[in-house]
Length: 69
Image (cartoon, rainbow, N blue to C red; front, side, top):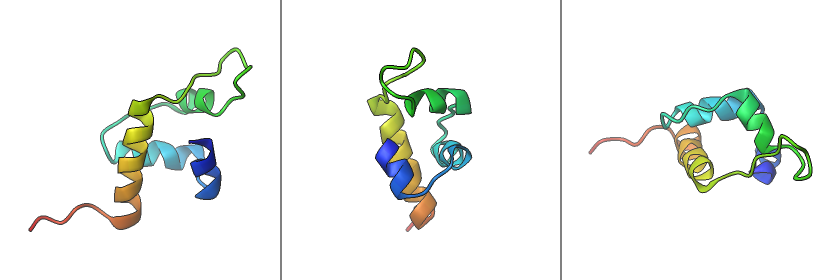
């Protein structure tokens, strides 16, 4: 997740907005815990659920919403 953030040049508020696109809410504080060093006391590992929702939201963010046929 850290590498995607850097590669796509995303800020925390942009990541929060991307997660909102798939109805997944996360605070900036929770997001900050994901990007801390592993030895930091407030570090939190990025789980599958957050990453999955971020990737799904990123698709919507970059391509737009899925069009109904």
